[in-house]
Amino acid sequence: MIIYIAAVVFIATACQHKPVMAHADFKHMPSQGWQRTLPLCFMPEYDDSTGRYELLLAVRHDNTYPYRNLSLVVDIIAADSTIHRQAVDVTMADEYGNWTGGGFGTLYQKQVTLSRDIAPAAAHSVVVWQAMEGCDTLQGLVDMGITAVRR
Image (cartoon, rainbow, N blue to C red; front, side, top):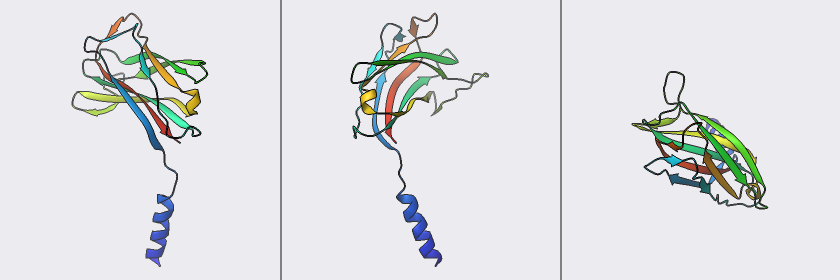
């Protein structure tokens, strides 16, 4: 009887709907730094045009990143060319200077949600601008990426 109950519980949990990663695209940052006037452009790909997705932004940095936060402007451009612009402030370190993202060694990754429930047509492309006050060229970032996870 216990084996039967355990098998039913195992099968029931295995059949639950789980998020599926549809697309992840990372851009390597220039070694001379990320200039304010040069945006990063992403074109997410989706495995289901009728599905709903969570859109995430991931930032990879090393110990040379000189700030506690990262200010960005993100344009999510729909298939009909409408633009949804949002300011995104990523907390990179706590008040004591400890990196808040995951990682090991000198490489860390911090991830933030751009949209929790978006259709592929509403996020045809994503453009990310560096918006750090008084900083024309930002050092210490290694990669930046967009991930679309099917809900």
